[in-house]
Length: 338
Image (cartoon, rainbow, N blue to C red; front, side):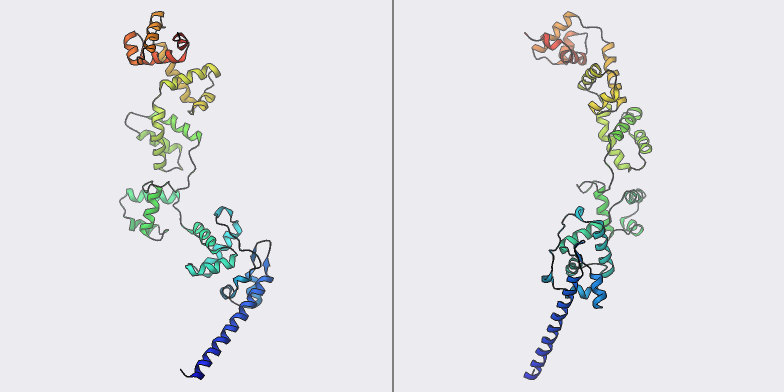
């Protein structure tokens, strides 16, 4: 290239550079005039109208060193206002469709936020989530033998069949993470209802009828959620310990037969509290009163560190349960003292 041509190219480049600098200064000045202090952002729509330039060009030519106000930073999605989230989503959708990494700088300029915060907020607001209805529909398809590719064709919510499968497995607890379906935790009232259903319909080794009745009682919950709750509640609802009976008996002495209050104290339904007390009374009624000789024998067993099963065998007329109750519940512990 000749010297003359090189000088021409340099002059042309210099002229373009000067025009860009001039345009950048102009855009930045108009943006300053259009700054909305109340909203903490520039009114770019006004700048576009006044300069008669495309919005993206205005953002590209804006000199970020010209900011008259600090760039806002909201790293937590809960700090974003509904207006800012709505504006962010509409801007990205209308201007870009899909945003690449280099475009987030322009999004940040438009919103007057750090571009990383914009990317985070947009991802949370727009990424598809596994809803309760979708989860149940997929479960039905799987039970009918459909493949994931076929299910994805019917529900193309996620980007691929693999992503759909991953989202479903997370909800199903197979990925080791917590379920992502947005369902309220079980309330105290719901737990009590499950306890009552188990007590009424449980058959040893068979939860089918319990599940059917629970699904009728909680139609908005998934089968998996209900079954999990039943299994976790069964251990406590079906079996009572000596400690349970002792606590209920003492609470009845304190509050009377106020089953609602007693149930709240021991975290069971009023109906179950009454049932536990009835079991305790039944066990006491079938056993004759303790004689002085029996109490003395029990005292010797306790002092000697003999367990209640062996003490029951030695006494011969009292069950291990009654030996346990008498040794802990009433005045016998005082009699054991020297």
